[in-house]
Image (cartoon, rainbow, N blue to C red; front, side, top):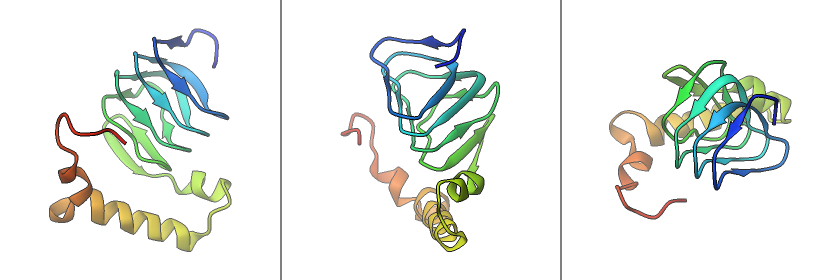
Length: 120
């Protein structure tokens, strides 16, 4: 946790996470995530393992593992995948999975998560 960061109540920060941001209450930052200067994370959000939030980004949603969030655009962080020892084939498989499960008409992952449902 860097100086001038603000960590709210009931926040969970896992190992190797780097935080230079403002976190509201009940936020979970998973292992290896990086939150750059000036980021703000809304309450009840989860930042996935090895995810990256770019400088000054306001995060109002959960961020999947190995994704980079820049303002409102979220994409797969291939650089982070490669730094963690993943191969280009594994990156392609994860990109295909995220595209199939989280975007377009086949967005089964997002449709199954109803309001008030159990939180993973």
